[in-house]
Length: 62
Image (cartoon, rainbow, N blue to C red; front, side, top):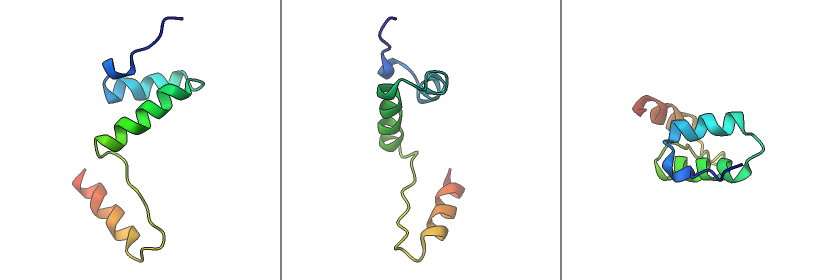
């Protein structure tokens, strides 16, 4: 199989790729890294008493 250039794929294309190639862990980690870099990931600190409000606000912002 020809190597995939993950950087050439849009984030949505990469997501679709990993959904159909679940064994490709390199693609999965590339997706996670790019999602974090683009601010698409939400980090939850369960020690923070206001974690639920922060998530709700983040979702509202899109």
